[in-house]
Length: 96
Image (tube, rainbow, N blue to C red; front, side):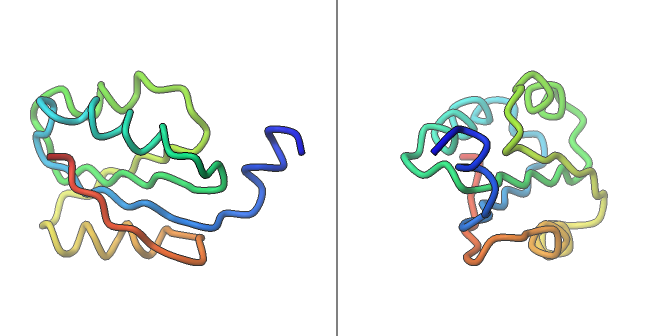
């Protein structure tokens, strides 16, 4: 199985809602990306961050990461992220 085949059928959608999480964000993203499973997507929804959070997410060049910006509130942003999920299962991730 080549690398592209591993990403073809999304099994798990990991959804992270963030707001000014630059202190913990790299550790969180690295932890999710280090999982043994390859067939997952990592949906990150920024909820109006004013720190470097979006810049940090943008520094990753991994096709499993999808960043959305949604300035509403935590629950609405989480629901937005879930609506973008294509996996069979959804895992909620917190940055801290």
